[in-house]
Image 1 (cartoon, one colour):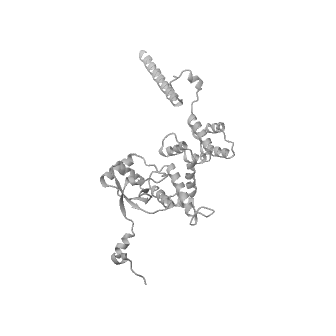
Image 2 (tube, helix red, strand yellow):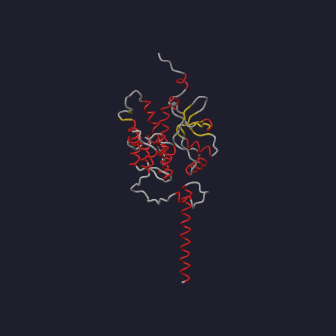
Image 3 (spheres, helix red, strand yellow):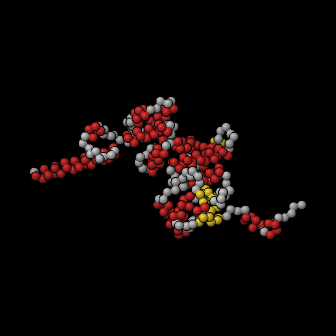
Amino acid sequence: MHLPSLDDIFTTQQERDEAGLEKVVYISIKDIDDFPEHPFKVIENDEMKEMVDSIKEKGVLVPTIIRPKANDRYEMISGHRRKKASELANIDTIPCIVRNLTDDEATIIMVDSNLQREKILPSEKAFAYKLKMEALRHQGKGTSRPMVGKLETADFIGQQNNESGRQIQRYIRLTELIPKLLKMVDNDSLKLTPSMAFRPAVEISYLTKEEQTSLLDIMECSDCTPSYAQAIRLKELSKSQKLTPKIIEEIVSEEKPNQVPKLKISMHKLDKILPHSLKNDNEREKYVIRAVMFYNSYVRKMKEKQDFQR
């Protein structure tokens, strides 16, 4: 015979149902650690300032999601920006939903919640997709091909984010770039310089780290980036182990169809007339441009003076 428990005797059904629901609790910000290898940047920009002002006025309206750790500490899953804004607003506690999650479950929720933001850099997508891919593979381990249901993992992630599976794989390839080249891909999305387009960057990611470093040095000296076709050639030569710094320079320096024409002047000639205090090519270029502008202004004034005297 089944005997009722003390909870059954002294609590109502509604109280027992509510006990099983997730509750919002206020946790000290100092007790919450960031998610390890969190791929999304928390930047103190204008948007952060607006969030700080909103929190000062209304508080944190959407609870964060955290999970318990050892020693009475917690790990942030969703809400890193709200946590940072609360710190800047001098607020000690933040509303949280505490969930017991495995590492893979926590990773998937962390990625999915952050991918809802409007502005996401290519580098953020790259590492976020990589983390989610690894988490989903762990959950479906033992299969010869990484699958989620009837879909390959990349296609599954793509369907959830309005991307093709191939595009997901391209983003993940970006994680193989050295940091300075990856920063250039972010700059391209932000309309900043120096920059490199997405598709050439994907092909460049197949180069070894040493080859990428050589390419970066050449790009900085030549003030140019490889086209998509050139990036494919670099990738194929790297694959066949025939890529050298000299070949990289020859390929990158080739004139592209849409390339802005550049005036080439012998540095040997310029060294004789430019101040030795100029430290690099950028300073030398600015000095030459100012000199030409000054000369043009001088010629124009002399012509005006001659016209006046006539």
